[in-house]
Length: 206
Image (cartoon, rainbow, N blue to C red; front, side):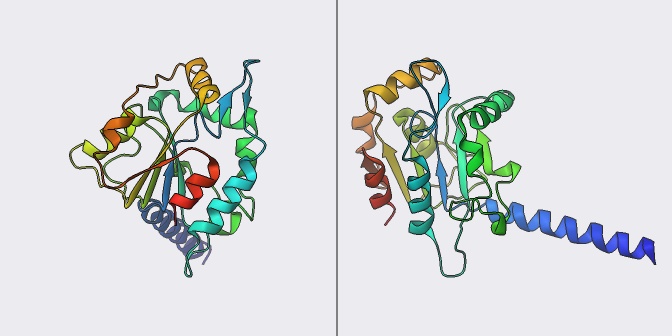
């Protein structure tokens, strides 16, 4: 009897795992937080802006669906996968990871929180070809272009270029992330929208 119960428990676990993977294969949003929501200050410490929580809460409300009040929001780190541990530490030290499981934010515990598959690390593209996001948000124009032109990669309904200001660019430089000026080329893509302020990003999601 105990063996049968164990088999059923294992089977349920595997079923839930596959359901989670299927759910996160179609994220509502893929967003690069680096340089915009997660950055290195002038003191060299990882930090997040004071408006970060309010922005993420409004993002959650904006993309909420009738049948899914917390659609998957995936973080896309512009770096190699082998450096994922470094970014995990950055998310922890900055306080960003404290947003996980928050009932008002994109990763509530009721929807499974933030799974391992909720963070991807890719230096040149925003998400792997197997994913199909509805919105893609990034502050690196070259990364957006390479994502949209990579063979086999699914085009999002809308790609939002969140233009970094001078301080954001300085932060990207501190993190060793190169920002290449290819903004004008983004005009060639019908799915791309430009945003400067956090509220512009939210408006572009509507």
